[in-house]
Length: 461
Image 1: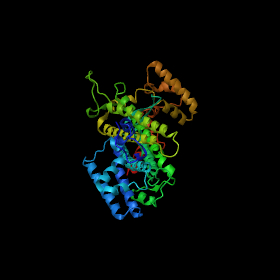
Image 2: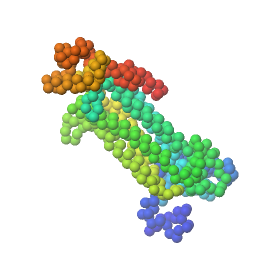
Image 3: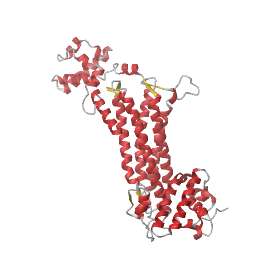
Image 4: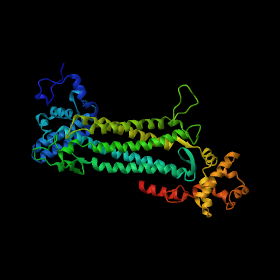
């Protein structure tokens, strides 16, 4: 059994084996590019007419036919199957059905190679804009939470060990900064996405007197590829996007990990609301953090897509190779995954968690995370910091053996350790003061956090 002859197959004596046709076809996934293929084709048809390669009447006929296909697709009336091979052939075949032989002129001075690259860039340009909007919404939720929790204290960690108390707003602002870099990075990448390969042909350009800058202008590209070989084979822009998407997922995954830990009985820093949690099939008491767990898990598939495309392109000779068909599924899946995860985490932070104030207040008073402040206290009174550091280490050791915290020591016990200690040591090591005192630029001090919030709002505006 063979398949229907293709437009390119007069060179061949027989058609493709049906299994090979299915294996070769990309219509199952690149149909997602149809709107962009139609938009690019409209621009190409207008250019062909403008340069006199086809007549004005033929150009108008092609544009009208392409817009009819767009309407049919949106109404569910145009659903090409495997026989179409890819979205480009599907559109061209349907166009010829609509306008007759004029439809066969659409592909003049164009190859599927530059066509596919154009479609992919148009698609990715729009998706980047959407993801950047989602990042801004996510950041807005972070700032709303931070506004309400400037003086809410939480334990800060290094090595997952209690280190120093910090403002909860300061913690949230750290994720604002991470996602702001994500937002900026995507904007920078868009400059390299927004370059037109249309007119590069299969690899060497064309003999027709085309106007590549005109099609670029119609499609709102910033510029055109200066080298036709590079234009049809370049997937750097796609790899850059996948790398940026991977970093977005890194940041969401890190936040997810903390939400998972904090919602556990052992931490108890947050409570999951019913709208963003699920239950166990056999343990009725449980409330599972499915949203952050799924985000943490989905990060791996985005990393995998980046690695997959790197491997695809690493050994490709110039110019176009069929391997590059593999870029689309990686891109489509990554876009869907990142957008879905951003939406879910935005909802989780906005309405799916509640911070447990009493537990957080207790958490910053039940450890030795104020030990550094004792050393700073002595250093401020003229004791060399390293000497003070070693002294406080002995103090902590003594407290541990006696089952005490630093706040439980009497003034006499403090003075036995060093005569520089006075009654103000108690206020110096109180959690609220420990945080407030860290007023260096970018620090967790309340004054600095409020300034950071104002600056962050300005960036969003």
